[in-house]
Length: 139
Image 1 (cartoon, rainbow, N blue to C red):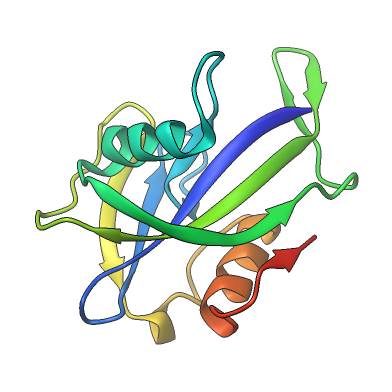
Image 2: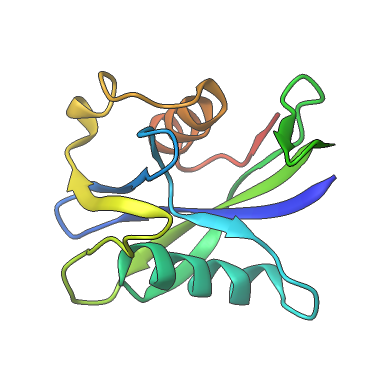
């Protein structure tokens, strides 16, 4: 298993922050791996800043996801993600991609997110977070 954190970041207009992956072209929530010696919240703030250029304030947990049917293979190593999604708000600033992991970073109206290319696991996390923001989701 690999511990991952993702941010469901909303702005004052209730738009959702998404980043576009360089490797697949898919849109996803900003986030990534928790490094040894980091807390989940510290990793989240770091990952969002790296991938989108924005600083966030973490508000709470949106969901925990550890689907054994969702595995990722990299360099011949298969891992099962253990993802924690957090609700967050962004401090003032314009999103920008890092050019390494993300090719785009932008705010989206929730109504426009459904047609974006997105991994099914990410789509579920987004749907859970925006559909029932008052509930912690388990999956």
